[in-house]
Image (cartoon, rainbow, N blue to C red):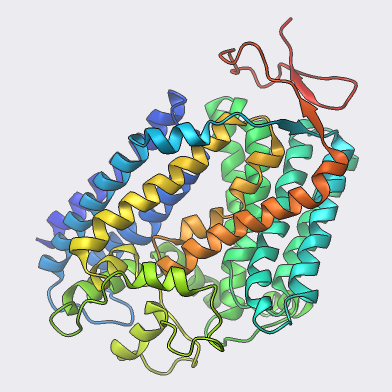
Length: 460
């Protein structure tokens, strides 16, 4: 029965990949989209993670009593979730029409984009280090800062994508990314914000140039940048594993140099197994409601309560990933230690009869709005880039904490939008809509530079 579950999960994974490739080839959904990033999270933290645990009989920090039956339940639940998700994403005419609303399109010269990027860094520094220490207010501005830093990197990627051979722009983009990463590494323990600025940088590159590449060149570029990001995340994970220490950027550099080969292997194991989120989901499936009652729509309530400081509302809900540490009997960990319950784990904790269709429906609508909005303003960096500022959270949603990551996705986008609105009007200019929106964009080299420094289509 376990092998049957493994086969079903592998088949499900193959179908997900086939849908992503099919929609990219037919241009129904861009290959690099919010939907596909979410589906990549499903693959990493649910289906492949479950295959890993089932194949190795390794459940991490929890014990699964009946792997055969529980894994079948996971297959069924994940399949139903995807059916509801794709149904909401593909059939959302009201959301799609609202996302396609006509708004003023803007662009900027190369210098203007880089100035906007540097200005977004200043906005991020203001949110993080000036407003961040303020009680109550700082909890929100710290998350807005992540969006501002992400947008800074996205605009830098957009500028470099238009002029890949311009060394000055390349150096400026590298400096912007390094400053943003260093700012986010200072006194932090999380990885998603740092990952977010890297993903948004590639997001800017993709929408200004890569999306017109041949499939082979796109795969090569994705492999190169993906490998760089993976190596960084392995070192980051290995340097912080289990200590819970919040370091400065300089201290992280020192910690990176002290990482051993065994640490890297363990880090790679954790990343490759999806941090065993699927086994944690299966533990929640086995214990709810037999050992622990359903906490109906806990994630939705937690999402709504997140802006309210605990100092004001003492009975504010706790994250499932924290309470689960005690409930599952996980010991010898730091007091702030938490786990990733997995998306299906959240569903079963929150009452699957209600949570499964509702969460799938809400996520499908939200991601459909983001992707359709990107398509409707695909040449406007001041619309496209902020909508990529929450991608690291979108990737992490299938791992859990669902309510927290959904909220941080939203605040990342809002923070990025604010950064653009604060400085953008001083540097951008209006772009008139194109007459022919159905032109062929298959040739990556058919771009010329006009006098304003904007990449335009060569119709010659």
